[in-house]
Image (cartoon, rainbow, N blue to C red; front, side, top):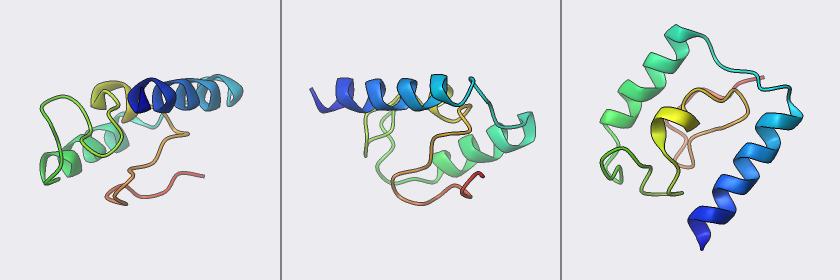
Length: 72
């Protein structure tokens, strides 16, 4: 249930922002940082349950463990 709630919040923020994505370079940097995360579970974030390939693209999203630089 928590995973569904987190996904709903993420999509709502993303749509409200106009669907803004990070740059390709920032996206790749985020995924590399996820590779070092001790709670990563395959292609999902172990902290929030989101799919990393989607979450890492969204400019409105941040890492729940503060691995990513915050986007403005």
